[in-house]
Length: 468
Image 1: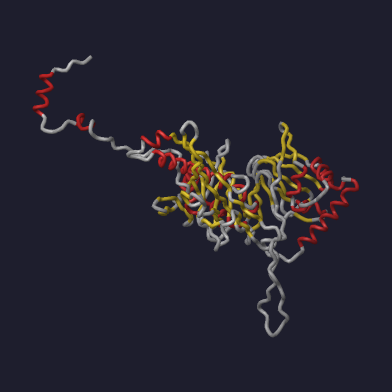
Image 2 (image 1 turned 30 degrees about the vertical axis):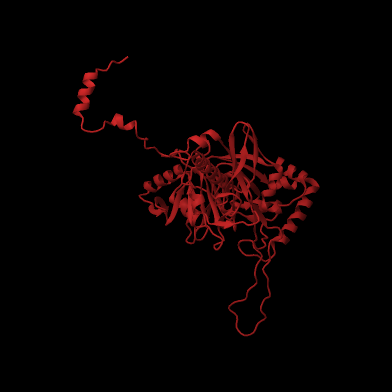
């Protein structure tokens, strides 16, 4: 117990000429911040996407009729060091798309041989007879061709799930038009044509299917696989002009709005008695909405149905040539579309790109985007997003996109004007008060994202961020 000397206290009071801070605090309210939240991120994707009103809750993407069948990626299963291709996954090969007989696919899958290649090994050589189908189960392979003046040039980089040589399945005698060389240790499954011929009588069913596929692909089409629009040009006089029409897909994709929801609970006593100087319900709601928006952006990137990482066309997915993201890799990514509005990458991927550029004596530019200085490459902003995942092995992805309906790009979908709207396409609905005097509010955010044409979105995959 502290004993205060009344005489000394009176003496100090007589010496002071103003109120002490200790006395003043008894009559003043502390200056305080609103509740803070570390999980709030810039959410660049939500900020930079053009948002389109989806009045009926569904957005249909109408496109021109496309004949081309896309080359997908093949999936494998492994038991120890033994790797096998899933038979049904062979339909991802162009020549086997829509092939109906599972038994034949099983027989084909059983005839693949597992081969391993070291760094620098030649997998196939240009000019040699093409007699085998190659499925890349693991590793990277450079596709090397001859340039205009005879020098070798890397045409493409293939990685896990890619394949080449499917035309061998048709039985046609062809030569390799490129050289394939292992960039990393590679495990490939190889199917020789001689093994296909040993399928007894079932090879005839395959050949009939290949002939049918060839007839289907013979339809006039442009380089994107769309039904061609016949046009005459450069003629003189009065020749007969071609007649044409623009055909559409009969079953276009429809995007339904997704929802992120939660129930916010506030005790009535808190809402009644502790609302000054800050409204407790408003602060609870503010942080809840922030969390919902964070989840919304995460789903728009990662959701298997609508997420951008899962909806990029397979022909718009490319791999890094050496692992870390180099200026060459970003140039390759940007070159695949017109009017790229921005790129989206994990902050660690942006840092890795900066290191690779510095090694070459290059210094990426910067731009002021909505009051924030961000890194740019070739004038395109490289915006950070921690929603893009990093694998256990330290690999991630970089997205590049053209945006807006007018440019046939990527768009966000929402519906404004919904009941009890708190923010665009987000509402807060009172759910009642229970017997414990707890007030409940249903908070809902409605959203989706659509890619209008395949080349609007590109992904640089297997970006390694751990190299220093």
